[in-house]
Image 1 (cartoon, rainbow, N blue to C red):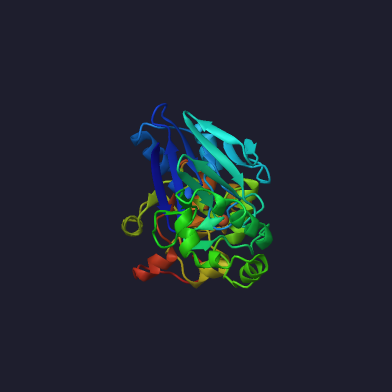
Image 2 (image 1 turned 60 degrees about the vertical axis):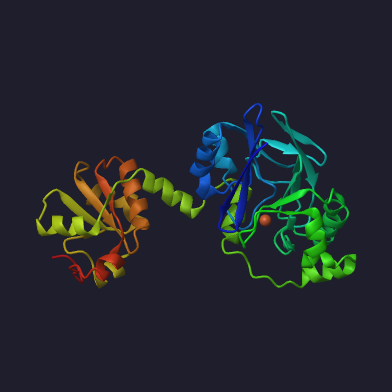
Length: 346
Ligand SMILES: [Fe+2]
């Protein structure tokens, strides 16, 4: 078996491949690492056949939907998952066949109702059901400490003690463990009586993961994250550096229109000399009056450089083929002590 473990912050993804047939499965991929997974599979001579989420993640953005479109392969989740982009829903005791490899699914609800673990040869991919030195939390949507107790003590921990444990998270850079090690040393597993375990899980008082609302929204619906929208906009827009713009303004370049897409108040408090004001919220509806010549070079700017990227992408979609965004925003412009003008333009 070919095995790759890819860490992104605290998230762990796994690429497992059949050394005989070169087919592979990718477990719990994370959105920012898409190129990394594809490059690793290519380096190892693997073709990804399945994209698997062990559960609906609340703390990171799954890459399964986007990779499925890119690679034309199915997304696999437990049948309790509500995500509409899942192509193959599987149940407890069923297997996914990847070349000569057999990935056996165990339904292990508790962290979420759709949590499953996958056993492949001597490896157990535990998702967030069993972590190294911890367990998944049970206080997020569909979490259930009673179910987690059963999944752990009546399923996973009864498996072979030598099985290697590979969780979906580890925040301390550890690469793996075994069922035996976890049974012996995992602090949460020392509370083996059901009521006491449930009580402990109910009183962990953990803080919410940072992107919980956005991660659940996108992972459950297949919708896009803010970072994804920005990345898509940035991918079809050229940028201009602050110094380059400054030099062109000083040379009084005629073709260039600087378009400040912040709200009027922010514009009047201080803008790039000569910039026109057209707030992002009004862009599409006012573009015909404000920018009658689509052949002009239009440089968008905003406070931080995000909204201006979206605005430049919109302008390009509307046929302004020379729309470009400022690389940075007014904050960086001010910090560089470049010229600012307050109030309205003459
Ligand atoms: Fe999770």
